[in-house]
Amino acid sequence: MRVVVTGGWGFIGRAAVGELKARGHDVAVVDCLDPLSHPRRPPRHRGVRYRICRVGDVAAWREEMARADALLHLAARVSVMESQLRPAAYLRGNALETERMLRAAARGRGRPSKFVVASSVTAYGEGARRCPTHGPVYPHPRTRAALAARRWEPECPRCGEPTRRAPTPETAPLTGTSIYSITKRVQEDLVRSYATRAGLAWASLRLFNVYGADQNPRNPYAGVVMMFGARAAAGQPPIVFEDGRQGRDFLAVAEAARALADAVEGDRYEGQATNIASGRPTAVGEIAAAACDHFGGGAEPTVTHEGRLGDARTTYADLRLARRAGFRPRSDLLRDLPQLLEAADLRARAGRAGHGQDEARRAYRRAGVLVGPGGTPRGPPRGAGRKPR
Ligand SMILES: NC(=O)c1ccc[n+]([C@@H]2O[C@H](COP(=O)([O-])OP(=O)(O)OC[C@H]3O[C@@H](n4cnc5c(N)ncnc54)[C@H](O)[C@@H]3O)[C@@H](O)[C@H]2O)c1
Ligand SMILES: [Zn+2]
Image 1 (tube, rainbow, N blue to C red):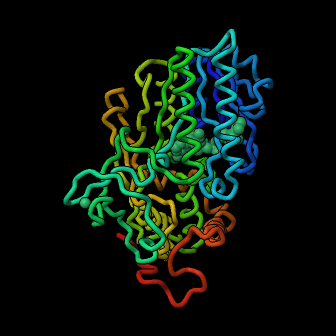
Image 2: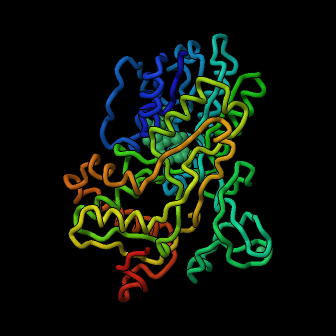
Image 3: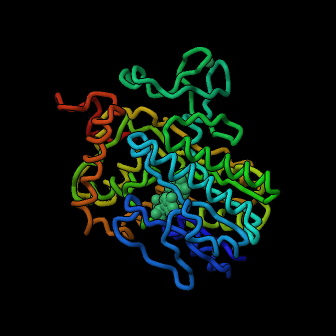
């Protein structure tokens, strides 16, 4: 098949392009090399055509579009934080440019017969939870007051009691509040809309938190793993928000790439949105502790008991739909962590990357999204320096 991969120079894009090439497809990449994702110019795959342009600049890649059998749409600005500071840029780059691309692709004479888009866990907000009294519920985002009082578990919208974690199915309402998450929801909706109208095949894979060694530490999904590693390698304590027990569902980038290639090739994911994840949560504090154990040297995580407005407590995927499509993930972040940290060569980069966490924390505070003790430290916060096991 001839496949155009937008965002094919990004973290997941590079893996998806590698997978599609390995399966013998003809691949072209459309990517604007957004400086936020690319502190350095990433390597090229052999035998792949690269168009350095914006997705919305359709004239610059119309020929590729006209020749393509399928369009794999991975291009997006991915910083949740930046999206709050620059909403218009995110709406333009992620939503309007997607619309322009789809409009051109659905109308063109030679045109792709399939659209595959990567949607995101962030669209779910807090996702599904379980109330001891009311069963499955979908709580509202946690309030400033709740975070300040360290009421970490989202409260039941019916009775106000703290809820427990639960796997999130695709039928969950999409209540993510960050501008980024809204644009990801819109990308999926636009693909569904244009494909349906034009009678084309489509699939949306809702990726959770994808990890891999060549990941940008600024990537909001699993970049924190690299930041923890960089600090631990430098003998500095990784900084962990909340109580460290908040969880994320991590998937190895190779498995994400295989699912995306399957969606491009066949009809297993067709006409629906499907969660793509490991199906299990890992506590963020445990990752920080494991990074410290890996490098030794006595550093231990600092648990700040600060909360970020808009963060979910613990999201992990209900994988029933994905399993029906044949998806059998084997990712295990804690198992892969030593290999990941070694491959990223964090000892060499330690000093620099480790500042990322201090910088990010200052930025969150300036933007008013960080709630809790922080600021000028008045003695260590409760639980600071202890491993959140
Ligand atoms: N990393 C994750 O865990 C994760 C989870 C859920 C969804 N996703 C989605 O997967 C996709 C890839 O994410 P990633 O983690 O590889 O991020 P990334 O930042 O590494 O890759 C995004 C790529 O898109 C390019 N890009 C951005 N806007 C563009 C535009 N308007 N025109 C052309 N190119 C543009 C960037 O230069 C970059 O190469 C994104 O759509 C993201 O929303 C990622
Ligand atoms: Zn309840």
